[in-house]
Image 1 (cartoon, rainbow, N blue to C red):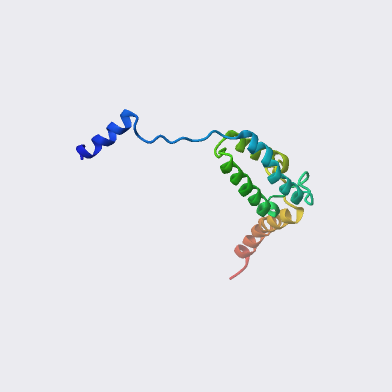
Image 2 (tube, one colour):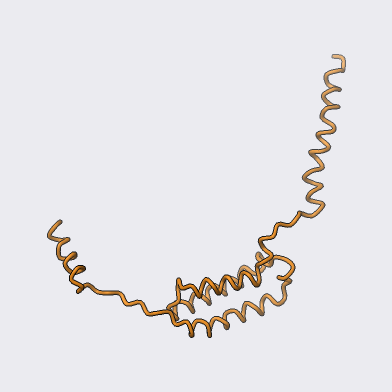
Length: 137
């Protein structure tokens, strides 16, 4: 085992091991082509009222296409895992999905259906118990 590990250690320490050369991120290529991906997404969202309500479930397939387009562009321009990729998606989320995190009250019918039966049961149950305990067997 020691004889097998020794040549590997010598190769790594001597600098003759193969070094991986990762090309730098081509920021200009990424920024100039990312707008093409975003334009398709923009045209699909023009129909929705994303300023007033969260468009998320309806635009999920379009968002997936945007993500694939931007990811392929990031791989091509060597910007995968780069800050510009995160900044782009942060800009998209702030622009289109800013209302998705807001907590909204449910419709009145839902509130009535959830609260009504329990309130009615609370009012009727004591009278029912009194009725059962005071009747003659």
